[in-house]
Length: 137
Image (cartoon, rainbow, N blue to C red; front, side, top):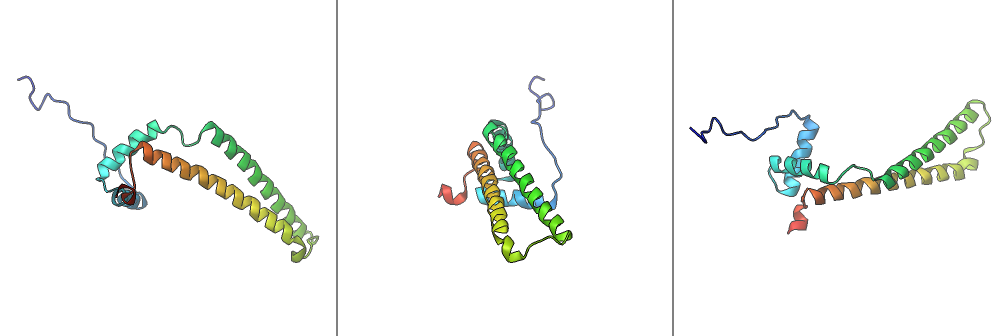
């Protein structure tokens, strides 16, 4: 019996267990994009391959540079703490410029990393053809 259902190849299926947090994220994606769960997952799988790695070569270099800056901030903080423990610390008012500078560096690093991840998320959504409901209307 050519073509019987027993001889037809079934479509591959994926069964997976999700954490409660991932289940909530999937439900949010379903609501956000107005698509069934399976379609959201299929599109994300396709797009993850088409979109390529999360970081471009340029972004990878930027992350290496940012990591270097974070290490410098860490060393500065460690030196301040050692001075405090040795009793050599100056008054807090005298160190305000240092703390402001450290805060600015950390904020700049955070902004740059956020920009990279937001850009990749946008790229992934475009590749997956997942538009926000309000964008579709």
